[in-house]
Image (cartoon, rainbow, N blue to C red; front, side):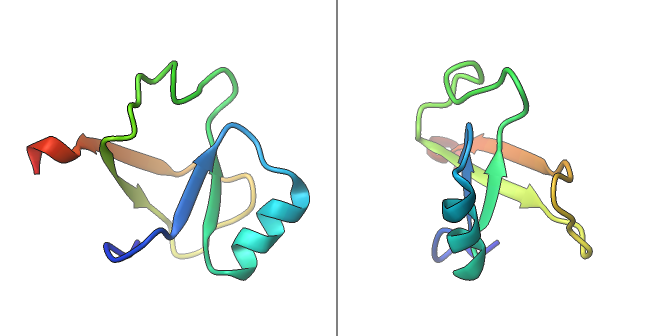
Length: 73
């Protein structure tokens, strides 16, 4: 993941066309697991995310997202 710009988007859901457009621009569309949301995870928008992506990423595959406060950096 690049530190210069957005390379992933995390959302509760995506329309198929939006997901395809993101992939076409080299941005990985990630979805929260069922029952999770930014609110339920107490995310404020002031976090830094580090995403562990396997070399052979597949559709519908779980990935690990590490979250840290930008204020602690």
